[in-house]
Image (tube, rainbow, N blue to C red; front, top):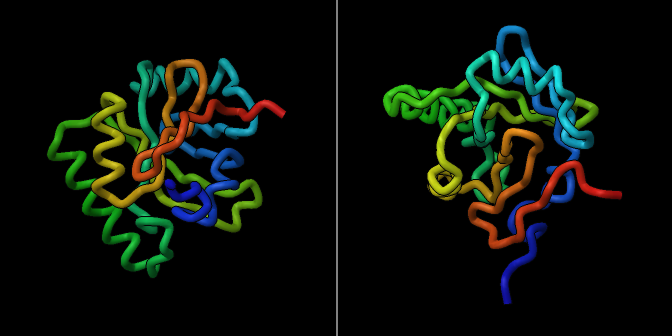
Length: 153
């Protein structure tokens, strides 16, 4: 019997409530509790994100909280790796709606399979995936059906 998402990461139920703040020019903010507005999609496209992309982090592998210094070092390593790999990417802050919890992340243009493999390597439970119209939560270390966002009520 497989582990439940909550057993992998106690924060799992809050993933669909994430606010993504992209460090694009102009900055783009997307609340995953709503469909992305056309303006936000157009601004992302203008910033080079006009095709499907992943949002993932190196923070808190396997749902275990690391120190800020450890998380920052992991994120810097990922930045270097993406730069060396020639990927189109931009920093994203993935935050709870009240901003009490944020994880530095990256939006990366790469095939979904590669993004999932990278997330697994980084010990991540899941990634956010943008298909060009809407976001999804796709399991990485977790075997789960993709979750379309926003969640229908």
